[in-house]
Length: 217
Image (cartoon, rainbow, N blue to C red; front, side, top):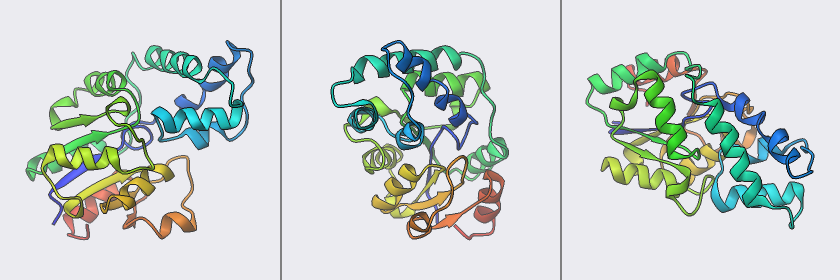
């Protein structure tokens, strides 16, 4: 029986992964660097030292990673001031979980400011007992630290806690933490590795809700 749910945000709750990918080229250009194919995909779902490491692997060990990421996140803050599109089925899933008394948290590699703004823009903040943002942990996804902190804040054991993710790094983190991990694919394909890690795959949040109602999760 699921006793808590941890939601990733970008690409899972909101259709924002495509937006994040567009911030790399202008951020890099300000430092005389060009975007390299694969960077957005490698960086997806990461934050902190993990993200800095990804950036240096694509742009060189001596690139000004901290300054680039500061600008990258400034561009995101500006873009996310307006409401971003919600994923289909989000409202229905949140309402059902609340009705069942199942506590929820957002666990995202985005900053707390971006998370709060996205929630506030749609009036969704009241659904969530906790928020775990990228700057709140020392090790980002694929390390399970963020999800373990989210479960702790909800007071739920990982084995009784559902992780909803769209990214490979997120699925890796959920599996590593011993969570019931469901992949709802967005931009990233379901690979053989993912199939060996997740508990289930759902095409949409609506299918997640159907499986919960049927007792399949």
